[in-house]
Amino acid sequence: MRNYLYIPALALVLTLNACDSSSSSSAPAPQVTTTQPTTAQPSQPSPENPTPIDPTNPATGESSVLGLRAGLVLPRAQYLQNVGNGIAKSAEDFLKASDALNQATLAYCGSYDPALLETAKLRFSDAMLLWQQIELFQMGPLSENSAALKYKIYGWPQISNYCKIDEESMLALSDAEYSLPSNTNRKGLQALEYLLYDASLTSICPASNETKGLWEAQTPAKKWEARCAFMKPVAAELVTNATTLSTQWGSKDNNYITSKIGNQDAEQSALQEIFNNLFYIDLEVKNQKLAAVAGSDIKLCPKSPAPCPDKEELRFSHLSKQAMTSNVRSIADLIFGFGEPRSGGLSALLRNDNGSGIAATTEANVTKLVTLTETEQSSLETVLAAKNGEDCDASQNSWVCKVRQTIKDVVGDFKGEYTSILKTAVPLAPQGDND
Image (cartoon, rainbow, N blue to C red):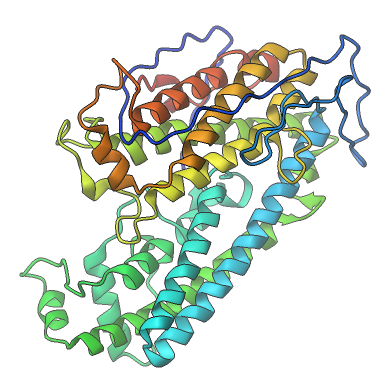
């Protein structure tokens, strides 16, 4: 979790350079028609029963991708209710997916049937991609106590200690009363990815490490038995942590965000928390998930311009590209609103607060980003290879360069008029990011 300091940003100058690149199978962004509201201001909803306000001329522009609707108007209370309830549903869905993953893990470890291993991998994919959406909702229970709950569920961007995962597997196999360690770099979704997907069964521990010799002395069958001995409690703990998240966040109309409706200071604080999370696509997606792997960020990849494949987020399951798509879906939820049909998001709130121009610009830029990520079906490895040395500062022909430039455009919107209209402050780290 990023613990940012905040600085006033009323006169913000945006300097975004650098870029990364890759594959080029992106479709043009669909045209989104917007309608502007009249100058008459809508009446405010009561905090107890906020209701959406339609534009005077209802928006007719609906994107074919994710049902994005532009031109809507929404007051603050209704926006906060939509976000709070949307995240509550995401937490509930993740809990269900975690339980399904746990059950699939138990089924495989009860028979070692290869077909059941594939089922467990599918359930992992379901849970991981749902979690990737929640990555952009790091507030409330996911940011409290130095983001302890978030890191218990998914420790990235910290690097997993795969040697220690092998060690824990051997300990779990030999100890009937084994209990999980507190270290988050060997548990959670990161550990489950390695345990389920690493087919080599070869320990990456150095030769001098005792675990290396113990592990390599085992037969493949015994190694899977050891992995299961560790994997079962890890998957069970994931369900426990997912339950904690869902419970602590709350339910529809009674959750962390909706509890703040009606208190002006609390509403503003919630809006600031939401605003902070928008910058996930800048630091985490653009820089860490794309630039670092491609060798386009010397701070994150010391070998730059040579690539750093070890920096790939999900290198065993090869879900890294899909993870970014899920991240962008959450940006769409925050900007256009959760649910079907979408009733309006942050852009609708901007329009409600006399920010029609920046609202329309953001809707167009986010729609373009969504289209790029949803229509490209290749793996991260494929799109990075297709970048083929393109300098993203000079051109944007490959998929990676297009995505990175579009993220810059979206983040430029966030760093501009948003701060003065919404009375929010740009997190210090994104303010200082020049990539």
